[in-house]
Amino acid sequence: MNPTEPQQPPEAEPGTPAGDEGALAPASGQRCGLIAIVGKPNVGKSTLLNALVGQKISITSRKAQTTRHRITGIRTRGPAQFVFVDTPGFQTRHGTALNRSLNKTVVGAVADVDVVLFVVEAGRFTLADAKVLSLLKPGVPVLLLANKLDQVHRRAEIAPWLRDMQQRHEFAEFVPMTAKNPKDIERLFDIVEKYLPEQPWWYAEDELTDRSERFLASETVREKLFRLTGDELPYTSTVVIDKFDEEPSPKHGRMLRIAASIVVERDGHKAMVIGEKGERLKRIGTEARQELEKLMQAKVFLEIWVKVRSGWADDDARVRSFGYE
Ligand SMILES: Nc1nc2c(ncn2[C@@H]2O[C@H](COP(=O)(O)OP(=O)(O)OP(=O)(O)O)[C@@H](O)[C@H]2O)c(=O)[nH]1
Image 1 (spheres, rainbow, N blue to C red):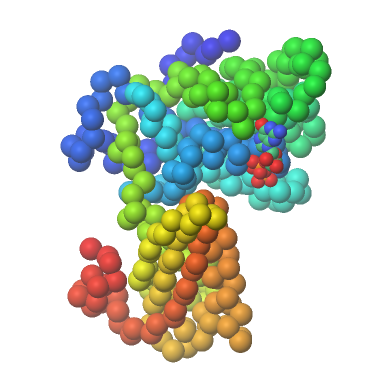
Image 2: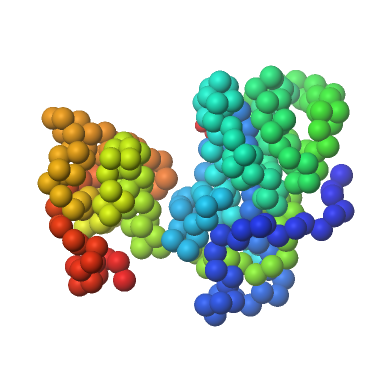
């Protein structure tokens, strides 16, 4: 059932090719590719992604960003580098929101990955599953991940169900599994590896560094800032991370203390960011903290200050002091 066609490299590669910087291992035998995990809500996509990339969930560095793909995790295992990408719109909680949020970009983000992992609950296939499946473009191999196999008590029913699924789509492979079972995760890696094109890795073997988590923190605050202020705030506003300390925590595993400054050009902008009775700033902080806790799998204490620095963007020395080189 494996596709015999060689895989096409994605249109937009997320990083500088490894060779450009000379920092990475030689290309021989290396594989690297983009993987999308899609499925209706609650089928176990997050559980699966966490199991696949462990602690490494990260947007990584600036060069890793593309307009088409937001990287949610990277895992380098043996000769293969697995780059997992976000598929917004495929992952909304409600079916109606799913319909509403669909647009070409969203579908496009899944169209040029190397392989799609379509997650369903083993033994089930609902209208919501069918909707997600209908959005997948032909040409990209789709692996049917029948997750939560541990919850299926009558295993004998899985074979006829799989046959039924075979009628619905030309799946490249069927993978009945339990995302919570580490052995199944290893088996899944072996299966997915074959779908990654032979090409040099895009990222260093252990891409996630302190610096990239720091970067991720500033990007997350910035994203909330702009989303919650709409078009009112000029783009010259920025976010600077003043402190990023990690402490071990017996209770939470990891604990991060992050202090960030939102730097704006005018007092009026400061008032806008803070909002009435501080409500807006509070929301920016809460939403950013929640997202960072999920991304970094840590307890996060996030403190945000708003500072006015007029003309800061023109002042080289000050820009450097904010951590931009
Ligand atoms: N028994 C069992 N439970 C699982 C498995 N995988 C995930 N779950 C549980 O299923 C529930 C949903 O898992 P998530 O990973 O949050 O699902 P999701 O698809 O990311 O959900 P959305 O964020 O709503 O799209 C959680 O309670 C998980 O613990 C599995 O293999 N077996």
